[in-house]
Length: 236
Image (cartoon, rainbow, N blue to C red):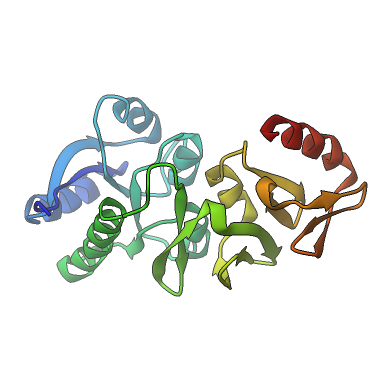
């Protein structure tokens, strides 16, 4: 495989902080700086013109925060949060961040984060999955795990965690249902209850209160029944 070169952008309202990250990017052989932005609005517009693989993103910025910026992006590059506050680290899991670096940034910590981004980029490039075999990556035990959508039966909310139930095995990740509801294709997956998102292809039968997958009954919210009927009709 050819040498990896990630196109990077830096987003920070502090010019001094941007300068420090820019210098680290320019010194790294696998990174190419394509843009600098000092606020989220500028970033949203700039990403339309600049192909970007990786963003070094501050969180506390005027007008829109780094999190609010990501909420508005339909296609998200890889994200490394760079912030002066540690209190946002837990929330960063919801955004599938590659890493979370605390300011001031030292070179070793920066390079460790970049290596994670490079490895994830390679993993996606080297995927041997057929074009019609869709998948997502899920961060579990500090590693990015590939989950083929055709093998995923359903996911279940467990407090601050989400449990994945696949044909092969089950595993738990630190994340929210909302983050996966956005990732999963809406024509194949449906949230049938506040605690369950199911693969429509795996549903064997249903009634007004439950759906059944592999003889396992899952609760169906009353206000989701019509959505379920419409979704199942669309794939028949």
